[in-house]
Length: 385
Image (cartoon, rainbow, N blue to C red; front, top):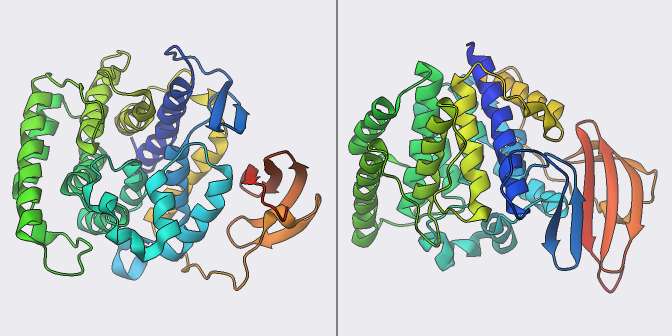
């Protein structure tokens, strides 16, 4: 399979897995059939969503994709962090999910790095957002450097960093070698992990790391090596009440091999809210190596848009875009203040038309039409609205 086809299938299948997981998160019974469902964003905002609606897992991947800058002269692709800030501010109005760490990081700015959650959180929710970085880089070392930068934007716990780096290694191995059986792939991950040194990583540290952090990093490596051995023996067992990033990645690998064998995913008692990221990764891995089309892959929402973004990643990877760094506007554009029918050039959405506006009891709802698709935006009403 051509590399570009592998990349596009990885991206589209990730969205499929995410949509399936998001559906099951918001319905009582587990299902593999896409149906419309209700999503409760908070107790005052209940949304009726179409079949195959994906969650913030895919939305974050799309945001990262739009923030990629291809640097041909340096043979790498990086992330534009100035654009991320404005993308997330806009995403707050159309999100399907939480991603609380990212929202908190934007709200608090650099103060976030003094927050205990930055140092102690092991879940690293939404760490799969690094996939576009991996797919858009041909060089593993360049990808690894940018991945660490992206992860430490929200998390500095060694387990989350190691999870992201191992995820990067999995993607590159599958892209380079195709199908890998359980034992071979795990042995390659173990060899890579054994040789990985903390001081080789450009972790966001304002001062020399403490001895405690260095020991913690080494302990997490040992924990991962032991967990990989259990995975190799098929003895993975998810019994944790609060899953961490390690368990999400290892369950994703286990479910990838289940998909290869024609079996349904097994979540090992994983809480519903964590299943969508596991499924997104598992289907993404499977998409890289499998020629078989998923029978229902055309049932998730906006598939053409997802496919186009997969093609865009390929162009970025081949340095065909020449993306310039984002320049924030001098004044913010408040879409909720515009009248129905207004057409403007939005700094993030580009040419945008307000197609409808509705003022409810608690929220203002605005629908806009852009070149890339339609958005339904919700903003909580204030005393001045």
